[in-house]
Image 1 (cartoon, rainbow, N blue to C red):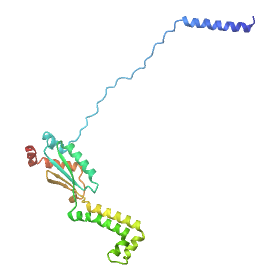
Image 2 (image 1 turned 45 degrees about the horizontal axis):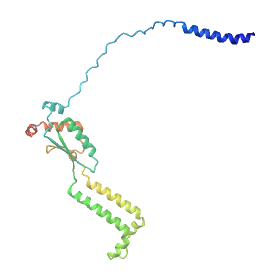
Image 3 (image 1 turned 90 degrees about the horizontal axis):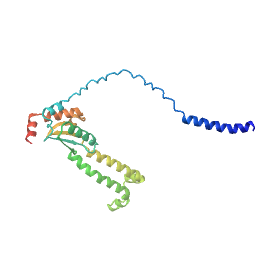
Length: 227
């Protein structure tokens, strides 16, 4: 039997015997686990208390048992066409949070009567000019004018540009005439802030203090308690 045959026969036998030996040999003991040393315990320090300043309105409201807003009404009259609605809504939420039970009413502040009348005339004139540009060549002979004026011919030369300009100018005039620029705040019918007089919007803290001073007047407190 050659060496190669002995190697082919002996190698499998050796591997089989080594597998049997590993199978019946008990596993070695596990090494002791070394736990890391924990750092010394440091007591947790409490942060210093945060002092929240109290506003005068909050102090007065708490002194009246938190019922300073009940039975009272605040009216915010603002210019709707001036895009003041966002500011009015923010003021309404602030007042309802600062004075629980307070009824805050939002309303439009209309412009003066002459401006309102002109605002109704502008759309009629706007449509009349556009109609004249479109069909003026048939309108003038009907009213006895054989030859249209020069301004009509200049408008007809650029028909679409003239109609677009008339539409834009009319919308601008109508928006201007419908705006009042007002932001008026009344508390139980008493005017506490006027943008028309001051020329500016009130700050949130400023308006809160004004409403608080008005609500804590003896006459206002007695009236709200009777309600």
